[in-house]
Image (cartoon, rainbow, N blue to C red; front, side, top):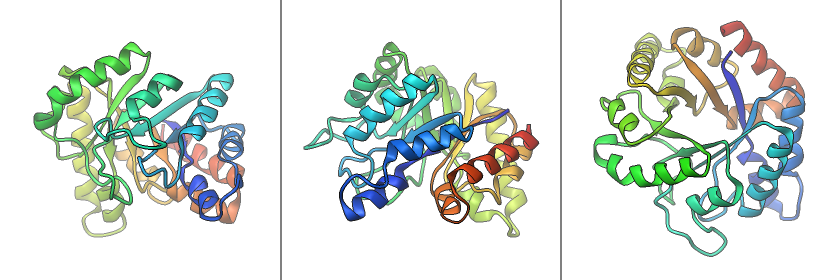
Length: 251
């Protein structure tokens, strides 16, 4: 069955909007795991507008104690600054089970594209090697249109995470079939290159089942925004369990 990693960035956004300690990122993540989620994801950014370095340390300790996956996402090329020691340094401190490298800029509201492996591959190679020396599985954020999954594998990546924003945008419209076919083809090509498949961005209860039925070999989905929005109405426990039922039905 495809595994569910819950991204708790939005919990930190809500906390930071008011200051103080509530809602607690660790408590929310614990509730998701208690409901059956398989892991926790966070994507810190250098401006600390949501997840902060202290959150990462606390979540790393909690997930390690629970024996579940901690997936740390971020841009490994963003330089350190006050309050943000850099992505690689954060990985050194917490040794996440999975490090997902994402080419987002400081000003982006959210990630919106994958790496150009032909351009970025050699720059990524030593970073991937260092992360793997820390015991991290390494996943690279990727577009379905990429024609160079073989390069991602050659520079040491274990997996790619498909940026699924275009699929979510096409869902329910005239181009849905074309979009799912594009991701299915990408999954087959990435698998042929020896890469595992993750997926994330704008996946929801509405569109997840179709994606998993049509796109082969998806090992893990990372879901944050939609899950937290849905949980405002249904609660975290119920919402996580809804997703688990979708994953089970799609396996």
